[in-house]
Amino acid sequence: MTQKVAFIGLGNMGGPMAKNLIKAGFAVTVYDLNKDVMADLAKAGATTADQATQAVSDADFVISMLPNGAIVKSLYTGSNGLIDHLKKDVLVIDSSTIAADDARYVAKACEMKGIAMIDAPVSGGVAAAQAGSLTFICGGEKDHYDRAQAVLQAMGKNIFHAGASGAGQVAKICNNMLLAIHMIGTAEALNMGAQQGLDPAVMSDIMKASSGNNWSLQVYNPYPNVMDNVPSSNGYQGGFMTDLMSKDLGLSQELAAKSKSATPLGALATQLYQIHQAAGQGKKDFSSILEMLQND
Ligand code: NAD
Image (cartoon, rainbow, N blue to C red; front, side):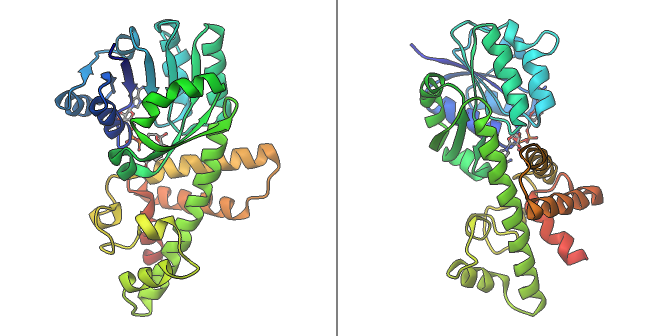
């Protein structure tokens, strides 16, 4: 029997993820506050719902891909929250990047109603969401993780079980702190080389074959027109917003304080992204941090 998936949050990431579920043969019902993205998904074969509660009522799987923890908590456990509208044998998968404590809070609320939930934040960006090659980093009971495989494999290539509830979010936040640090470092190196008259494309080739090689250089070059199909070659539109990176860095610093971990570069990266946000660049892709260095 065709399995039913409810997908809530169809932004830069959620939209292409839901489309891959449709391609894989799931019956997908979608909900987003933004009617335009719902119309786009309807064209791709999704059923649209007028309310989130309506989308989930007969779903075998519920997947959410939302901006932050406050929204995720309110969606599931707020007034008229989804946990009162789910089938008992549903599996809830939250793929938003949120605080581990928020993920555990929602999972606990689900558990108290007899509902299974895992946190499954993703890494890979919009291109990987479109290609169905995301990395999923899961936290929760192994049985629930095993049950999630069928849907996660339709959207991703690498699927990890990081540990108990919240562990997926911890691993994801550690990764994104590192991502911010190497993106800033990559932007600094490319900008300095360009200021010295070097071609950023040649610089990128040199560093990719040298010890500075990293993911930002390989697949997400921050310098405009070095790579096709990346936000820097498209006015820094789409991709992973500075607002979201700044949120993730804030989460990394909360985690650092809580676990008494020294993260001096993470702290500096947090400040740099906050400065960039304060300069009104929050809606641009996070690789636009290069522009801040240039303007300075
Ligand atoms: P986005 O802002 O493009 O999309 C979020 C969507 O959620 C929007 O369409 C918005 O209308 C919708 N939404 C907000 N509140 C809602 C509500 N109450 N009910 C229904 N819909 C609601 O964000 P994104 O880039 O798709 O990121 C989503 C999540 O994935 C974030 O937690 C982000 O940190 C994480 N993430 C993003 C990337 C990336 O490259 N963009 C990569 C990895 C992880």
